[in-house]
Length: 211
Image (cartoon, rainbow, N blue to C red; front, side):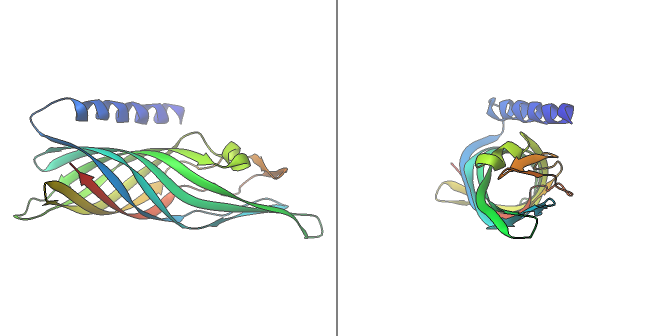
């Protein structure tokens, strides 16, 4: 797994260098933002449970884009607000002892390969590619998250020009490849050993604005 993570990071770094090196193609930098609709499993152990809440989040960031005729390569650096996990700890009688909510977010580096369909006024495209994410959690939750997770992205969008800007609204789906949390961690003084490891998965609506 470590070899896979390092290989993906190396691919992203190499791609960024390739995007920024001057070539006979169209390169742009821009901003990105949108909404994400999350799907995450709950976590539980014998005496505690963690329920995922606030499934609608948002994301903002920067993007680098380079087009090569029908193909395009795009690298992003994005902050994503995922939602909250609410933890509840119970005693042996089933009475609630403690509860607390922890926010969850990520820093993401998606690498998208686009196939573009050139039309007279707009350019539809399909995209797919890998993504490296760095999860961020509050307090105890942060201690239980993996340092790096891997995901894949697929989607479609359309490019069009408006007042010197290139706008690219897009619909995409992210599917997690590796687990978000460690095999065992402690929250509210209780050990959590998830029976099913949740992966970061979400539909998102995104808009890129390139200058």
